[in-house]
Image 1: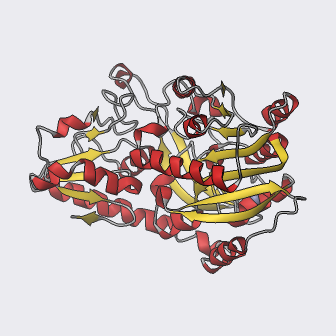
Image 2 (image 1 turned 135 degrees about the vertical axis):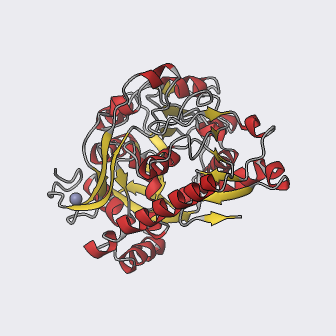
Image 3 (image 1 turned 90 degrees about the vertical axis):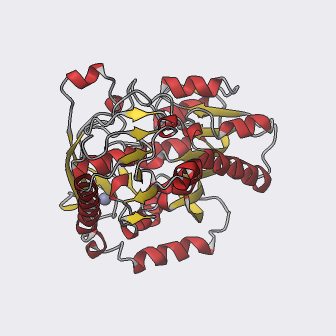
Length: 407
Ligand SMILES: [Zn+2]
């Protein structure tokens, strides 16, 4: 296999999690009686451009098919993050009734509804029918397609050049990142700005966040590699902001390469940090597998010990990352009998691979497990607050990443 960006042959494994089903492939009761498809979940690192990328296996259509259940609006913290972002960019970039904001992967309209409320014209791009329909109910026009150079050019031809193109947690999820980036270039006005948010590879490695690896997550990105991808598409990263979201993300600001806008010193600062972490040498990538194995072993040992001791455990948050963790650890309902989740679309279904049932959060109203294993550690504060009643009754909260913590 060759690197999806620079074409160099891929020779080095960053992380090998064996075989796993798609992390968002939640199953109905009827589907439990049928065979389930597993795909290799192996991530390689390119020594030419340091793009960390999944090995090829499944098509995009299969991944984002009808069963895909992620609605951005189910996390209160994420909604607040989106509202703060909208306020900031409207002020800083003087967006008005005459502007055009395009969001790629607009999901259920969690972000663009803030621009609608401010009277700023906007357009969502979202191939997933169920979430696109939710966005349209907020008054957001949605193009129901995958984004890339072809769609970017068509938007430009239709006079829909953007002053601002936003992509939150989509950049790492596109199979052809170069084509996607050329699309951004095509749809951007001469003075336009791009902002993209994605989990920062440096923080993933530092925090042993191997559970953020799944098939839908094609690229694991450093600023170094993103700057290179932008440059090749005729764009330039002119600013960058580290964010606490998703265990540590970057928000990069882009413009046309030839634009007079000055490049912020923050860009050189983050690049230097990445170099210090060894991300421009192979050594920086080779100790990730042992870190992942340590997290997996510690969780499994904890679950086994509690089972032997007759303690009860429940899970909270049927997130994709939870599926990666549980499937790599081989956890089944005997070790974790159920997981609660606030998303109605997941309730009554089963976690892919592990077949652990997903119940609504009020299942915990009548039960007091000894331990609550919080799977989406990135929103642990929010989940602790929601379950303050359980803590008062004596339940202890547990997280597995970056290391096993109980309390
Ligand atoms: Zn490469």
